[in-house]
Length: 161
Image (cartoon, rainbow, N blue to C red):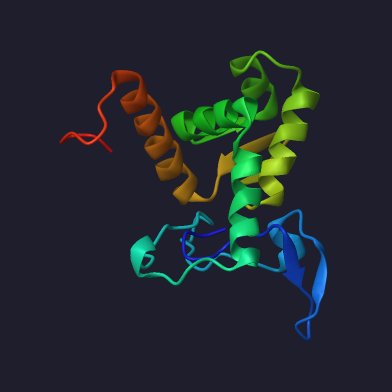
């Protein structure tokens, strides 16, 4: 998923414009990212400003909500942060970093992979994961900034997010 594309959720359209059932992943909606580097990482690009966009449609709002639902999980946030810090890690090291079993970590990573946020590759007996949607990095930074500002009571002051 790229910053320039709207994700999924709510109801998607079938070919011909008919409403489909609930969309659970980017693949279900047929949404693809736009910008890619040769490394397979997606770039944020320069989307139009939020204020200049038309009001989100119910499908777009549902898609955005679906993305936030997947990201609104402390374990997934920690896994993404670990991948931002290390670039790429095997499941075993990710599991050790978040003190969870490898199978539980794999399940969480699959949810992120379904949205196109992370990708995997096999290296011998290990599966290594990496962050492919670089918009997530800036989203995590912005979220952390907002959280820290909220704790510091720094709203409406210069130097805040």
